[in-house]
Image 1 (cartoon, rainbow, N blue to C red):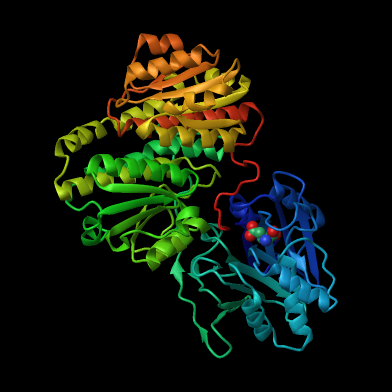
Image 2 (image 1 turned 90 degrees about the vertical axis):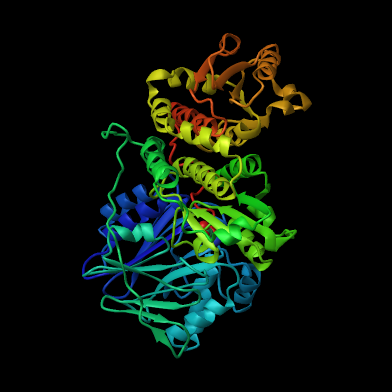
Length: 618
Ligand code: GLU
């Protein structure tokens, strides 16, 4: 889950390492470190582990130390083995200090390998599995093995998904790297003067003219003037160069002039433009087939659908599965990927899986896809990264087209997934000629969706500040919804937990009196979503029950209603009478409120505790 960045060049590479690590930090920010190989082949290492901004601290250390060399490796860590401290921060040195190494992943046979090293009298310094790899390489080099042989045979000893970059004192001036990851594990970047290696193409984009992807179990050797990729001891291949398209940096908001200190806020506001482009392409584009990427024969012959994901992608999957059942009348199940990866599929040949993962690297979802594919299921992935592992192993993939989402909490990728699910559902309904009246209504409602998104995002109509005060003053927060709004309250609750560290829980409305009511008291805050397909009278009854237990109520409703207004401390009125579009709008105030509550309580919304953007470990 963490990030690797290496650079070889003509001049001092330390600023490249810092810039690369800054772009990787969203993948893990427990700690950060770098190692420079100096002209006499010795190593100089700097580490930062006691702040929430380890790369910024590392940058200060680099500036004050005057560290300099033409070759270096760096790392941002998301700890799996061992606490967050300097000792466990990468790079790790081998026992003779002749190998310096950074590592992403988990060495699954770590215990056995550690015992083997202890039997060979190798002293172990840290609690990480990563250090073990450096020692294994060193042991092999001490047996006078050539470095390429030593690395390829070490790679074979490691179980699990692991990517490594290292430098050697005995074989200096080169960065060596390997990955057991089947795709996207390590990527090489090049410009006129420098060569780079990273675990994320995003980190390479701004420096490189070309990038090239490497494959599982290949050994990569980069020096100032060459890149070598070795498949096994006898064969090497010439890397295929892919031009890097320089993307515009920041999309402007609806007014074209948005400034913020927080990436999350920028990404929340970008939704207006992103969703509008997506709707134009998938709903209004004047072509018959709005999803040419998908094999229609397999899809239309499916008698069952499964929707799967984790976190926000699971919540989006939930919305997708409800839509497909309601609009298409086809059985549609919802599964956590972490459960689906071990499940038997009934009638696999007649099933299509929609697997949702914004990065395309989520380990649980990759395993779920593999399990379904092995049983013969047709797999469609909804993803942001076309070059990701999930996209590569699926039958087809649909891109979210949000642009890179950097802030750890999903916002624009979540709402784009909802749009993709809904527009695909419309396309299938049209092809199967079902529910045409509903579809006509839906298409009509889409015409004003963008205007409504702008209204909800622009603060002016709503008192976001006051509501965020209620949130911060409450002891606990509950969110309730029904049917299509239930995935939205789950997503809202997840945002409050992740970004604003609030003790929040989501329930279906009917569930309250079966248990959670026991928690309602003064200083409890309940968000109730009342959508157009809800029985408004019943929802008002629930609000009364909550009110009589002294809890405060915030409502997000589709229509103005005196009783709702009277029972609510605040009512967000969302003008959409379409039950399928209301959820897409209703998530926006929840995203904004979680952001504002975080900022007000002094938390960095872009840096939630204990989390990382892409969960590449199971
Ligand atoms: N297992 C290594 C550690 O704990 C790397 C973790 C990761 O890939 O995030 O340092």
